Image: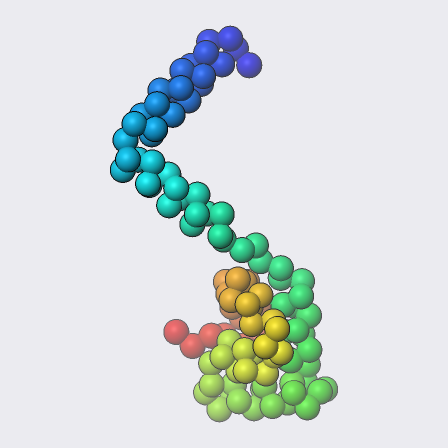
Length: 112
């Protein structure tokens, strides 16, 4: 790293930290961002994917029920949510985009 780059970054950090420390609005905004970004959960899609594979397996009774409900017009994500264990619901909530994409890949598009 070039010496002037280090100096510039140091100056920006010092100036911004002084501005934040003396401005209550910026300090509150910074804390809000830290809390919001810190509370975001990571998606553990491997567990969710195995649950989806189990529920959509046409050889199992639950898979036959899933397929019948989706063919009757039910939302595939909602049916999946209803047929999985309640322990997986928070994980499924954290992985909503991945769940939707995987169900689409399996041929069960969501109803929007």
